[in-house]
Length: 354
Image 1 (tube, rainbow, N blue to C red):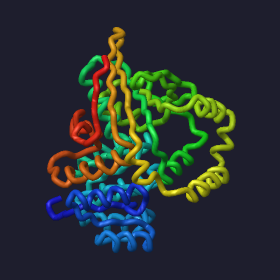
Image 2 (tube, rainbow, N blue to C red):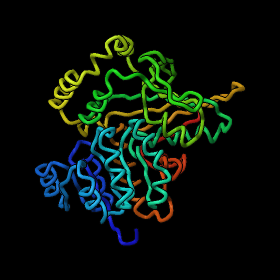
Image 3 (tube, one colour):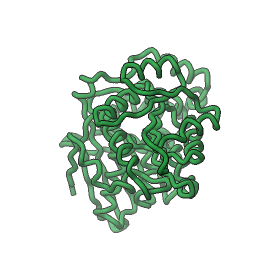
């Protein structure tokens, strides 16, 4: 690794990739940017004054050749269920640290299975260095710290304002018709959509939340080894009801033609929330750990809007990984940086509730 130098941001011209690139420059980094679309990559490079590369992920040796000069790649081109494995495989051969901004539990599971390969290559594999899953992983690790006998952890996400980017919405569309996943007795189990519902009190208001297949069912388990983990999202009752109905039409939602129609519709929308929308939005992650004796601890984490957290944490972690010399293998953010890592960012507050 001593001959390597610098950071490559792949998928740099996407909505989140652009936010990350601008923040990287503001933090004094000068990454090389890359993507498969030459026109978009070149245009962005000219606007930011950066060097660029153009390659897709279909040719393994080509990807390896492009990664070899770099110490770290920050992978921002989703859906990661399709793009992460070719990039990780290339990183293993090129001996380049791998970071991404996924929230897809399948990607975490896949990366963690490559732990020994990453150690042998002397690289770090760390999926989920954005809103998915840095704050929630830190919260899960903190809950385990204050209740080390925990048998279950439940996390509840709640957003105030803001909206999804095209990339996030497309990832959601790719998973249409799939069951909801949660961790039970150390293993991933599927449930009907809308089956797991709970009420949580956030800032004095009771909100309904429904289980979602969030990355922490993989990352949280790796960080804490707590065998039962469920992640919920607060949603209006009508949306939760529609999720329940989706169980009866899953075969339609999984149809490739239907998905393509949905994705094409998404691509006609604005790329993501505007700066003013991001600045006026906020998010909360509520967490609770319980043990078999009925003892529980609950904690609330207040945060800026999700895409803002993503560019803050992704750039900071990339900057830190550039200086790492002995941390290898497949890791979660809290395993490397600790459960208090998220608290350094402006607008983040953690409150013990019980």
